[in-house]
Image 1 (cartoon, helix red, strand yellow):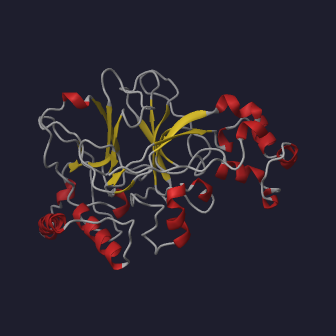
Image 2: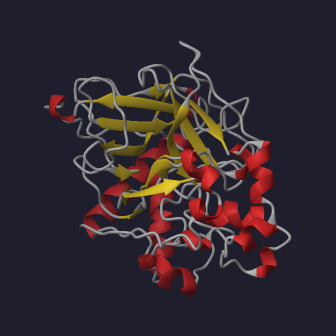
Length: 356
């Protein structure tokens, strides 16, 4: 399946209004995940990984106790529930399975449910197999800067909240796709997820290269003041709704700065906190954004970024939990983003992550 997503041109040319921002332009690649059936040879979100059969599958060794949320479902149960809901509402953007795939999921869910119902010691207290989050081939996402001969990025996480920030623990792997001869056919899965939003729905990608500018939080005080002057917008003849006259910075952030959704590179989506610089624990270099794991592809303040191909779905609206703006069904924080950072001097140095 080959599909494309096209971001509409920005309503205002940033550098025409604010030429001083031109040096701050950064390339980014919007991934545009959409539900599908990716293979190990595809770039994907939540899909199967090209993982060597001889290499141990990564596990999280932290303590994993059941929370008080009452949520106790295996990834298979989560996916079956989504499939059932999509069928009930005839959702063309939801997950779909062949009868064989659905039967296999039900068998897996039943086996894991038996283990959970057996009582303590809970299986989740053992090392927890990580879940695939994203697999990106360099051929599809040329903005990646892998080490050595690597041409493949694989990101996984543990579907449990971890102290002190209460977010999934992430793992990043770089590898050469050509070096993988025998692929692990049946990776282990965790017995349950702490939260359904930590179980990514398998999605294919339609990578699109764009140019971003920094969120107003990332601007210098002088530049932020300039962006906030309505007179500057008027003098440049910018066609901006006058309702933004008192809050032009909001228009800038929502329409001209960093793109929402899953992406590689670009600028961080600040908002939950002020900019929080990350530094490499090995060489002290300031780290740069690698991957944005987004709860939503757009929201009410960023709907101008909705691709042309999704405009009809956006206008139609869908019941809660079936939004075309949440194709991966991932939800981190309070519908926030998880930003992964890497060291620009060496991608092999330990990465870090941050909820935004």
